[in-house]
Image (cartoon, rainbow, N blue to C red; front, side, top):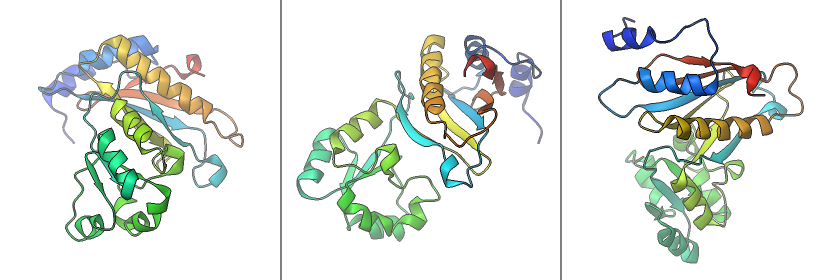
Length: 230
């Protein structure tokens, strides 16, 4: 695929053979983000685990101290007082069985995170085929299956992100926007890395952090020196 002129210029800033300190990497990513919109900065973390084994799954959630810079739309599956509580806490959408045909038949997906009370998981389970592939299924490990819907909504709105391995054992997550300060991005990144290191499965052998790369939406990847992270 032919790269655009802007990307080629940005790529010249980065030494592909080097592994940078976090502060240097963040500065380079910001400098290389030259699109006309506020690019998202993402971390791509390859782990030395095998996600095919249940005891080597790495999954969880963490609240980034400076948020993601994105307005997150929260859908809550709840009934009665819990539905009222969700509304009061600032959920964008609240419902129960009534939402099933809307999502299943009409393809309505105008939300970014789904929270559900445990008693609603039977209902939400019917949407597994739609929500599962999009990574939208509520999960107790991520704190999205809970009776404390107020805390779940507040954390998500404050910048809580979920991390999980893909099939090639890589975690892809946003850590902010290119308009953030270098300190904010570095803080967010460190909080994420600390959480992932803490989540290391006891059965994982060898090097855990195989490679860590920061990139902006349209910019080149910048490798981070993993030795200093662990």
